[in-house]
Image (cartoon, rainbow, N blue to C red; front, side):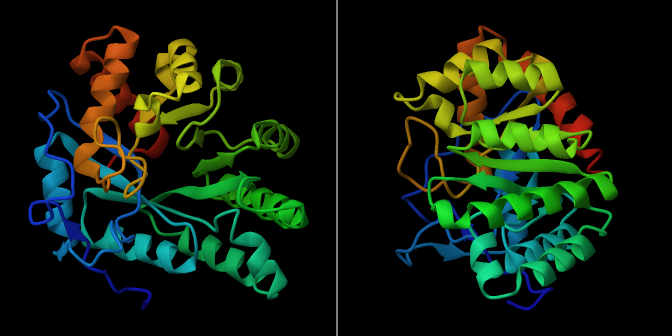
Length: 294
């Protein structure tokens, strides 16, 4: 992909395998983490349309905009091009922890990190992410490179006064220890929060944001519901991580930003809060992390 080329994402209206449109939210919110550049299906069934149409579908559901998140150099370049293409997008750029050992082995990690730093200079790039630690897909031989890459991303976030979006899979203790050892940026987001009530309490103590995805609606995810119950409301965010993690009752189908109201309504029900009230809270939290979309 050329650095300023916008791939054409996929449209739900002509793709019956997508979930049906939800009832629009009474108060608009923002998708804190999504990947418009990633195909929603390998089936080839989807009809391709402009990025604008994907955001129009989200806006019709009460999702006013999104943070387009990079996880390698092509997707980070895409994030920069996308935020220039549509004002409803802000961006984040990073090297995913699973990619760091491969780049290091090829002698390319340092150059990749330097490009991430350069891309982060764009005024509509508001976060460094997704970065962090992932012990699920990378073995022990890649841990040192993951840790080095994570520390470098923390440095970039702090040097540019940007938020940090963390990918944390099976690595809670080491992520927390690294943030303390390096000195966390002012705004830290645990993307697709995957911890339990104990990690939520640690986030509360440190002022770290917890972004809940469709996983909080999964029947086997009681740990996430326990975490949501104790999370400081001022630290709550919501996301899709589309095209992944589609919420119940549409789990297994492709996700998209327009689907996010299912997750937010589930969160409101679990918390015993009015949907509009929770949306107002999350909207304020989102702006506190990323600033204005205007």
